[in-house]
Length: 112
Length: 115
Image 1 (cartoon, rainbow over the protein chains, first blue to last red):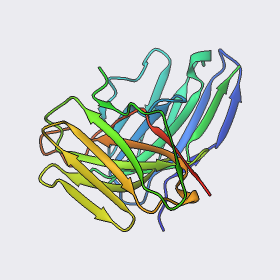
Image 2: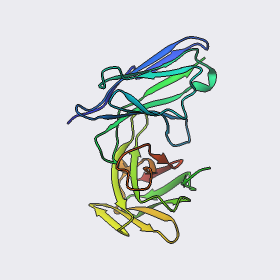
Image 3: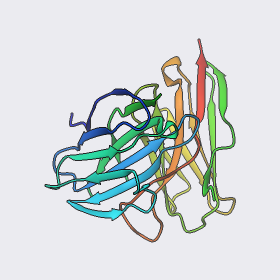
């Protein structure tokens, strides 16, 4: 069964360092999402791509976060510099013209 | 503004009994809802959905009920099994007929099913 791949699964970093997360969506899925989930809350959208174009990045802290999907397939989310408040689960999801989104296993980020 | 709310942080149920998880929403324009299940250290997995043209959708042990006038939906699990222990999220995509777009999630409810 096709799955969304994410790496790394866990990342520990010190504040002010740079971190990067990678996501490979289900093959053929044009829409890719990055969500952030803080413990005790539901996931919240950071950025949405349609193919290689950004559709919604209104909640992305653009002073420190960046995201790209250069060839419209896999995607990278970067944080530079990381802050203590960035500690969270970063989830990637993909969909193909449906409301149902398929999520990857996530990257658990801890900023010390 | 929390447009989708799950007001019960946790629920504890005995194996074999019914689990009822609740979700309220404030945006009356929402016309489709999804339930996701999430185990620790894993991403959410889709469980069941319902369109606003229906008031009930059933899939095996899982049934979702939608009360549009009350802006309320609930997920029933019958019978509950220990493997159902997880965090359950309700979510809604953008209203207005869009078939894709960001999901607005509730805060989640931790379900624990005791043997």
